[in-house]
Length: 71
Image (cartoon, rainbow, N blue to C red):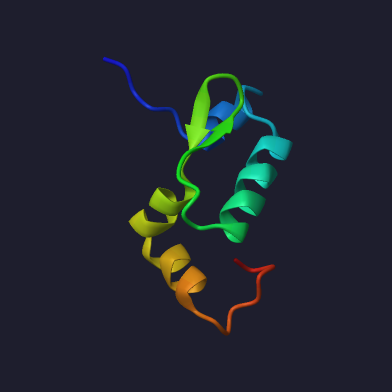
């Protein structure tokens, strides 16, 4: 049975680099409607879906008083 690995798992295996994650975050912060951002070789990261799936990040992104560095 195939599973979707987490970014953390891919990062530990060096299949996704810190630069990949930073580029995805920068792109998503510039345009939250970006959708799936390609990372590594053959992987994609949908930060919008990840944020929507978890309460604390969803609240942080929605709060205009939260600094961008925290987001």
